[in-house]
Length: 573
Image 1 (cartoon, rainbow, N blue to C red):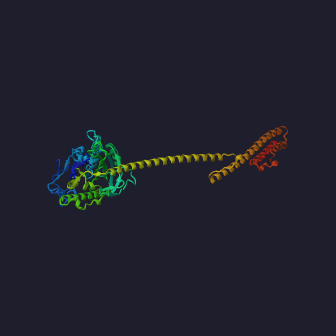
Image 2: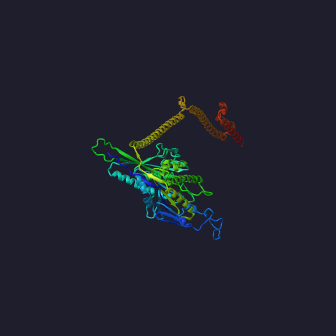
Image 3: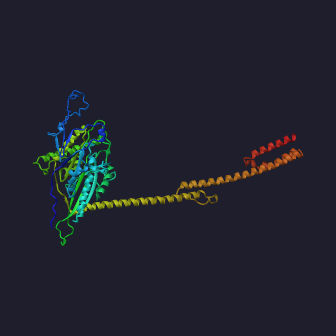
């Protein structure tokens, strides 16, 4: 039984490519000048310009210069002696993102499917087209198709190759895990999780087995297709830090690392069907493909917004440049091997720590530097080309990473356990919500019942006042008792008023009849005394003492006196 030999190591260096974007519509309309760049398939050159450094504010023709002293600086110290920068690939303004991927980075993606580490990095100044090259754009291109990025083409090739191998019937199995994080202000944030304490400011730790650095607590999601990865990627991009700057309307303010961990389980070769020990023995290769979108370096000027963010971005890119410079200097000295332990300052920045394996170890690494053709950006473009030159001198040796069957199963079990924990947590939350809802309904029903009892007690008649009313609140009992007492008092007062009104009605009725009789007596006999006696008999108030009980008695007495005066007046007439 022979063990399949892994593919041989891939010696070489960091693959460096350059892409020059065209001038934007806004730049053309505002009259931005184009720098005299000359591009070939593998070289880029800047022609000599008439601008030179002078000690006064006048140019060589004696005219006042409209450019600042910073823009008039001589940039010869940033150029190669021959003025030409050689790269693996150079893409002009007409090149598509698919062409960039096919020629420069497709082999890195295919190597990841074979169990080798790979990295694709995009580096350049702000608004030079890094994010457009890596992630694409939501805008539609001229041919009506969406502007896909390197990520789209890489995912299609990766899952296409894995699916093809699995369908060949050789017993191959694969498992792909995805993670996506950003490095913002030297803090590692998990973009696959919702913003919270568990996803912010993750700790970067060193692997105890010497496999580099990793972000502790970074979520890994098992994915099975390119569409699933793109769906998660689009949702995670909403949590990425962006801002409006003077260079770009939507500018990335953080570095992002999209990691695809590919495990391929391949059966051992030459295992016959009649072998008794055929228990599905296999070897597992694991490779990590990292696609890095670095935030753009930019010049800090007076009044620049987001100074802290820009300073942090420039600082991390500075440390990345220092690491590249140290690696290039070490690898340039052929007498010094990487195993000799020369110090490389990876620990100076979290970005360099997370990329240490792909810069210094077992990885196929490709670097894409993006440039803008404007005249004002020449200095930063030359700095970018200088960084690319240093990166091209870094050697790398990529070979498959083999892990044991137990290690692979542990990874799967951890993912299954994590999923089960999430399901249990979701069920617990659902049960808790249901319990709280049921408790609220029971409390509401009890409260309604208590209110009904209180209302029923409030309308008890005075005849049932002797019945005791007991509630859960002493204050309620006191209020109800006081209301009952007030109701009894009001009923007594009502009865008194009714009796008084009845007496008033009877008295007025008697006075009316007495007046009629007195009028007849006066007409017939003219005897006023008889008429007055009739009036007094109709109002016997003094005898019963009702004047002390009814408030209307004085008014009736006054009325009787006035009637008697009328009788006397009638007699004299």
